Every structure is written in C-alpha cells, then in structure tokens.
Length: 277
Image (cartoon, rainbow, N blue to C red; front, side, top):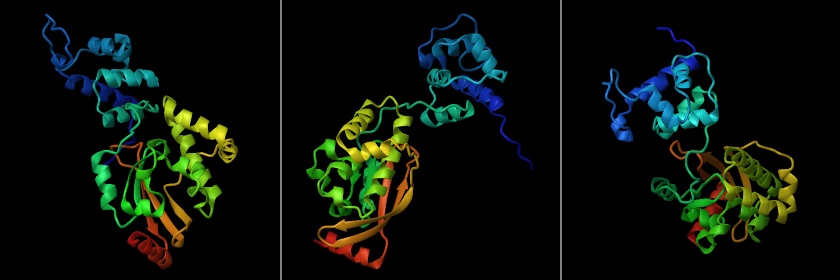
C-alpha cells in the first residue's frame, strides 16, 4: 500500500462538494424549486447565495482550479455549509488560512473540565482561559497560591496576581522569568484574538500601571512554554519547587489546564503540611 502527499487544492474541492451534498435544503429554510434536484444536498448557487460569493467562485473552488480563498471567504463558506468547529478548522487548514475565532472567549469552566480539576487532587491544578483568567481550581491550588474564592472576579487572573497582588508579587524566586513567560503567552493570545476587547483592555492596564510589564512587553517575546519548573517562597511552609505541565483540551483549545507536581521530596513534604493545615 502506498501513500501520497495530500493535494490540498483537490482535497478542498472534494471536501466542499461533500459537505454541500450533505445538507438538506429544507433544514436551511430554502424555498422549494420547481425543477427536481438531480443530486443530493444544496446547489452551488444556493451555497454561493448563503456565503455571499459568486456562483463562478464556488464552481472554481469545487473544480480545484488553483484558487486560494481568503480567510473571510473560508469563514463565509464554513457558515454557509454549517460546519461544526472541527470541520471548520479542517477547511481553514486546507485553504492554508488561520481560522477566525468562532466563539466568544470562555468566561466559565465547562463542567467536565471543572470536575477534572477537582479530580486531580492532591496535585494542585487550575483551568485558565487565553487571558489567564482562572476559571476553576482545586483545594491544593488555593493552599499553594491564594484563596481564589476570596478575590473579586476581576482579580482572578494569573497575570494580575503576579503583577499586582501584594503577596504573590514576591512569591516566585525567579520572578522575572515567570512574568516574562506570562507576557509571551498574553502576546500570542492577543495576536490570535484581536477582537477580544477585554484582553486588549487588560494589557493596556498592565502597560500603564506596571513598568516591569511595559518593559518586557516591548521585547515582543512570543515563546510559550507547555512545561517547566518554578520555585516558590511560601510564607507558611518555606520553599516549594514544582514542575508544571500545561494541557490544551481538544474541544476547548483556548483553555489551559495547568498541573503542578512537587519537584522533590522536600517540596512534597511542604505541600503535604500546607494542605493539612
């Protein structure tokens, strides 16, 4: 059996045809036509009308005639064909375009992920969105960092805590590296979500109120670490070193599951004492 490199132009054409033929015109509220349909699904002119493009454009795409549709055109076709998120992303990949955000940024944790965060005990864990808003956390994470329930929602943000919270500001031994990595993440998220005014406002607040943030933001680092090591000075039990892992849920790719694991026996003992208090 042999395999061949994917011809994205031909696959894009075939995918558009297959998804057009899958749709039932009655489900889209389209008027019935006097002329009987010889093939299943929508007609090309119906897709063109729904997407706001010309019929000739749809024909050329479905015939694989070398067109590379823009991100706006791909987005319009995805909406016209009622593509679910996974198929929408696939269409953008075939067109070699970056997908636009289909949904508003999450401000609450999906229940399955919130339950998972709790189930990860005794490992400290929390769920963040792309802004670093803390959406869910378990008991061990509150013992290690701060009681998130006692904070107003506007302060439940990992970057805000690191920059502005009086205790967390001095919490990390290598503070500048932690802040630098957080800023790199925010810059990457800002580029992915230019429409997110809340994120833009948050960055603007940090820029005007924190000289360290403004200095590091100007360096334009975008390296985002999915795992690493942090050393913390806890006021109650002393130094705790942790290794962290960041996982991205497939169905919620703009969220981050952050898991801490004690890096040595001394840190494990300190965390055990902290959680037993």
